[in-house]
Image 1 (cartoon, rainbow, N blue to C red):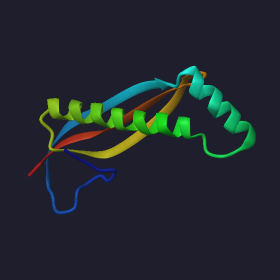
Image 2: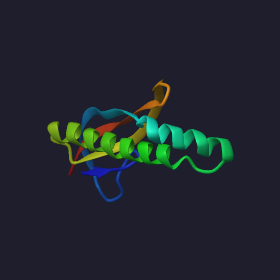
Image 3: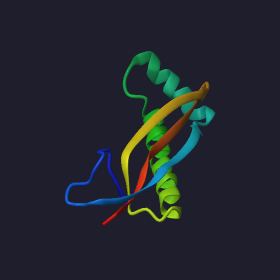
Image 4: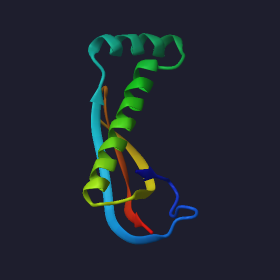
Length: 104
């Protein structure tokens, strides 16, 4: 499945727009990693525990969006975007969304 952020795919013709597809996940780190991140926040530096959490969430949300597109019979997802929101302290939702299309 081709996933792009652009509205079209160079060299391909979009023959049908199938609609909005999305995938999301809500992630939280366990208390041990929260403590490490809090200590790192005091002394400065990258909060690797949260970087890892968001990378995992991004991959899972893309995977779920692609599965949604496959159910519609799509060949690609165009105009792919991400959105994040904090659902509670230490937990975040990551949403991937785009437009499922058939290519000719």
